[in-house]
Image (cartoon, rainbow, N blue to C red; front, top):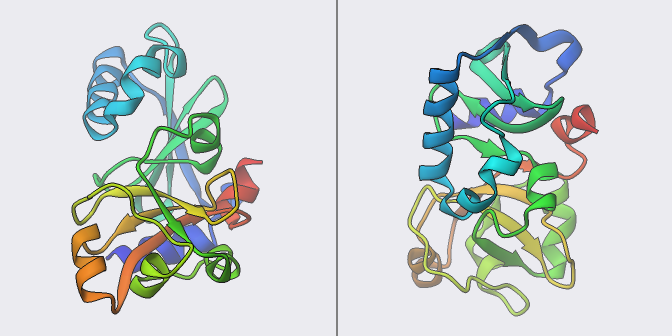
Length: 187
C-alpha cells in the first residue's frame, strides 16, 4: 500500500490528477487542526499563524486517494486515504523544528535526491546522526551532513534503536524529496 503512495507522488501532476476541491466547514477544520496538532506537537505554538481559525482550509482531492490541505493558496500538508498528514518540504523549510531530524552522510545525498529509501548503514555511518530515539512509523526530516535544510521527508520503517542494533535493510522510506514532482508542482 505504502509503495503505491510513493509511486503516485513520483508522477503526480496537479493538472492531470485533481479530482476536485472543497472549502471545509469549520467543524471539519477543527478536527483537522486537532489531528495535525496531535501528530506534530511542535506545531502547536505556530498553528494559529499557519492555519488561522477564520481562514478557510481548502481540501484538494487527487486521484488515487491523495489529498492536500491548502491555506491562503499555500499547500501545507498531504495525505493518502486517512493516513497521517505529511508536511510539504516547503512548510518544513519554513518551520525546521516541525519534525524530528535524522541525518545521512554526504555519500547518500544523491541517492536521497533521486528518491531512494534510506538504508540503515546510511543512518549509522560516520557523518550520519540520529540524536533522538524515535519509534517505528515516525515522520522525520531527512537532513544531510553539511547541509542546512532538509532534503526529504521520510517515514521510519524501524525505530532508531532497531536501526542502530540491526544496521541492515531499509530504515526509512523517502516520502517527498527536493525536486520530486510534488516539489516542482508546488514551486
